[in-house]
Amino acid sequence: MNEKTKVLIITYYWPPSGGAGVQRWVKFAKYLPEFNIEPFVLTVENGTYPLVDNSLNKEVSSALPVFRSKSIEPYSLFAGLTGKTDKEVSTPSTAFSSDGSLLKKIGIWVRANFFIPDARIGWIPFALKKAESIISENGIKQVITTGPPNSTHLIGLKLKTKYPDLNWIMDMRDPWSQIFYNQQLPRTDRASKKDISLEKKCLTKADEVIVVSDSMNKVQQNVFSRHYHTITNGFDHDDFELTNDKNKLDTLSIKYVGSMTEAAIPHSFFKALSSLDDDMRIKISVSFFGSFNEKVKEIINRYELQDLISYHGYIPHKAAKKEMQTADLLLLVIPDTEDNELIITGKIFDYIGAQKPILCIGPENGDASNLIIENNLGENFSYHEREAITRFLIDQLSGNEYPYKIWTKDFKLHPFSRFNLTKKLSDLINSKESTF
Image (cartoon, rainbow, N blue to C red; front, side, top):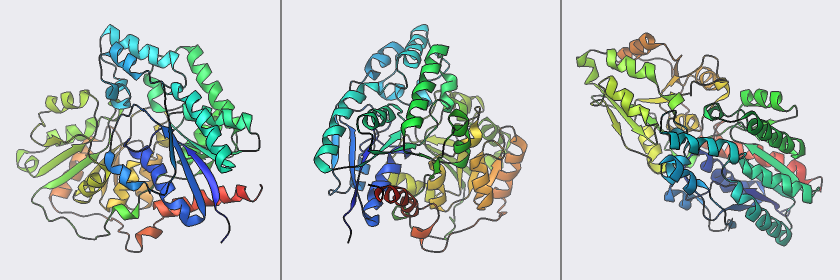
């Protein structure tokens, strides 16, 4: 067999950090060796994580070399200014709320204008030094940086500048300057221009750039014109048991798994629940798993839905997958923000893996809604279709069904399986290896 291609993956988020962004590269690293690629990982030693999931440590092979370097983390200072915890200020769903005292607003302003591109800039010098050592000692010729945080890409930029022959692949899990929560930040024009300037420098220097959706590809073309590869997020077939069984429950179980920012609060869904007759409401059970903006409970209380909706906080990813598979409907909400047509959350792919219908609230003709429609995965509603959502819920309570496409073949071969997506990544990596 040919000698394996060595590649260094630089990622801030890595177990014990939790969340969808972590799983993307944990899964890539899991399957890359099956395509004759030997991954090395560089991550942070003392990171501030919005979510912690120690169960993800079990996903990392003991044979995978994982290196860590320290970071200067400013989130403790920011937490002091805002009155929030370190976890809250590093979580978009709670960090950028429009409510708060003057001191909190000052803290958000500092975060927006002094930490550019983000509050992880304190990791750059330490990660850079460690990366240079790993590259030198292991004869590595290819490096992948994944963001957010976009500070990670600045490490790639510095490495590429020092080692011009190094092949640098830039993985953009979200847009950089065009990320939806930037609209909530009180940034000055100077800060915004600096952020875009850094993004363009990276996009100019990177040998290859990966984005997670076709719409994001179009948005990035408007920021900087170049070729972008689309490799979506996905689900790991190992995390799910392929089953066609329909839940036989006395209630209609609706579950939402993941974080929820203020812009993603499903007002129309809550209004639809509130409009149902009492004899129908008692047949519905809604469960929320994850972190939620502080306004969510306030709105639920306003519509007197406390008896229908339960909160469970963040749960380990394997447990989350089981919850998804025991639902009758899975709620998906795309944030109501500018350019949200390009948003296609990592959660949607786990919903697909769970093989349960999706109730999606978001923009018409967005990436998420198109994916659901094209693959017969559920129903889509715009943000103000309260009456349509009500009718849909009544239909479900009445036992009416609609087309839903079950995958009956080998789950490993599903177009959105992590294995299949790693094959696409490996093709990109190996195509560069032949040039060395």
